[in-house]
Length: 272
Image (cartoon, rainbow, N blue to C red; front, side, top):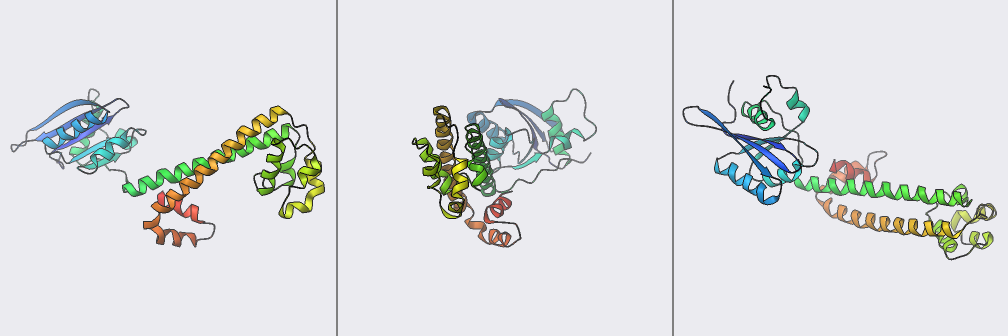
């Protein structure tokens, strides 16, 4: 079989160690391979990099195993052509012997040009993707906390969500803070409503006549504090995303013109 890469390496990635098979050839066409094991601490990964460079290796391949491939890829991408391969693709290539190590098999497939690397975006896009995904998780966490807050109110028979469209809007927050401050008069609480909700004061007054106990106040205090923390984190995260999206302003502006795509969705699309 034709040799495509005269010198190359296959890397089998694990949580605590990586096994590396280095394949080399001499002027007479003799092929040799050497397998070494390195730890995953940065010091040992640098030793691995230096060992590969000492043998003039310029192309390596590894499977996309969990998140464990990421620090290795980050360390090698500046000095090597790194192929990140789907494990399913490697598994489906025929001809593997039963006694061969994973790193040896990866190296052999790479040597003969039988591996296809996955697309890995530039580091700027990868960093942006980390932030947009983190923002999405923060937003989901906030939604979960708001749902938890509504369940506590329902337990206390406070039917705020039945009247107010947004429990965490200006009116809802004012009413919740008054509840936590010890105000239990439904009429007084309803007077805190603002905007269109003021047109529903009578209905709101009925909804706020509940069985609110210190136990519910304790839960609401913690939940509201967590929601405020999440909102602050989302705001800070979005500020970072805005800065990182500056190089892609034209693309985001163009996507934002599509029906159903807002600015946040456009940022997510660029990152993905």
